Image (cartoon, rainbow, N blue to C red; front, top):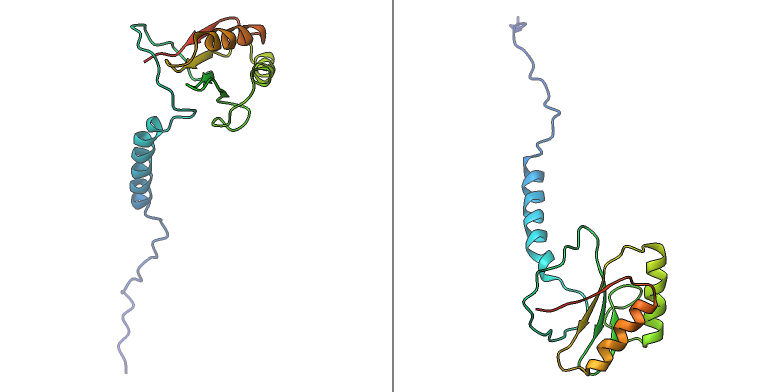
Length: 140
């Protein structure tokens, strides 16, 4: 005769998922993105002039940045490849279309300190002609 143990309880299966490793991975990814995001800058490399002005509050919206490099080529950070040079009338047309959909968009000009002043003034005039109520200058 075999002895049965009726009092022995069966272990219940644990159907819960341990989420601690997933939280650890998410925290590491968050730290990585927080460190690398400020390092990612779009646009063309230009040497900006020095100025002692306060920074402009850009809120949560990305500003529209038109750039003139040392060779006098124009670039725009939206509406195509930001590192591809475009003609001034095309740049003004793109800016006009963007400002018609979002008239409060901040418009900034980045001009290399070695570029002819006339190029920067021409760009600012084209931006204002495209509908920009005010145009800011980016400095270091």
